[in-house]
Length: 123
Image (tube, rainbow, N blue to C red; front, side):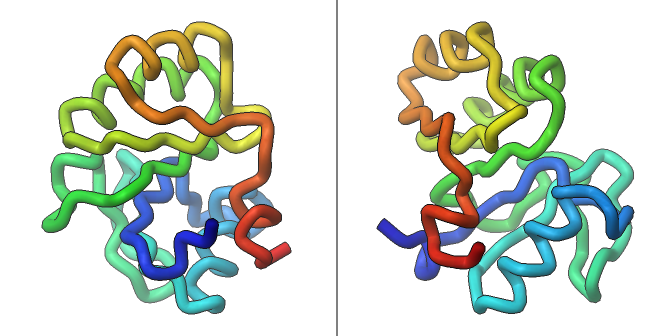
């Protein structure tokens, strides 16, 4: 399943070009995906407004893709739930047993152990 026609919230987008959050954001934009970047530092990256948190987004994303450290993912689960997002994709290295359990307890569909970029034919 491709997410090309869905609204994606990329949590952990970065202004640092060497970080995965930057590379993913850049490649999603270049491949025509409808993606919104989320980072508490906000600002502008690649000409796109970056949102401090999920609640700032004007429209509810279909999926939250998380590319942060596992301990941050665990904290973000509450934000994902509060925003009414029912699907979360934890990039390899972002997941933890606690984060997965917490998301499942909220009734979310959890995807982990797969690369969002590979699964969508970008990388």
